[in-house]
Image (tube, rainbow, N blue to C red; front, side):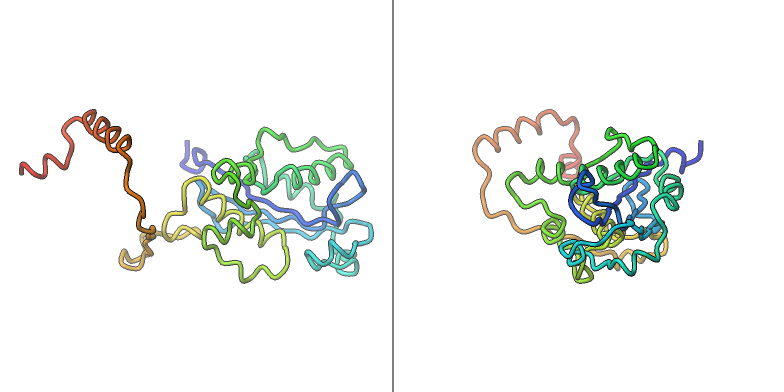
Length: 233
């Protein structure tokens, strides 16, 4: 079995639409996807604009800036669906407020009498953020600010740009980005002294008595700790 076969592949994706509900006749107008292998962006992306065959409400246009005139020249969902499904494959899909994006994709698939994306393969970053930071804002912008992710290019919403930002947010939510892995790179070509280090703010509170007791009890469970070996050498 090859390393790629054993690797974990995920697709981070986002959509732009004509409105908030497919039940009201709104349609997908853009899809953007970012491939991750073992939680690292590979640089392999997929993006398409989609002709929705309907007018563009002003509120939606102000969000993404995709006009009826521009979209009328783009392929319809039926023309891109095979490429989209081939790119996604059987991989888990990651989306922000996944019920919205997956709901729109499944509505488009239903119009073509295609099977829906299985919700069991969907990872919702809003749910992760709310569990990890209860009570905090969980919008994509707010999470980018929390993790110091550059938002300067996001003057309007765009499916591929938002998917790229979400990929960075997702990696932070599941444990933090490793240095230099914001993009897929060959680590053998990166000088060690050029790898950025991450600093954490100094703790401003002291451990409680319960914390100290629990820590001491935990240390007693460690057999032959290396710090004692270094003292005796």
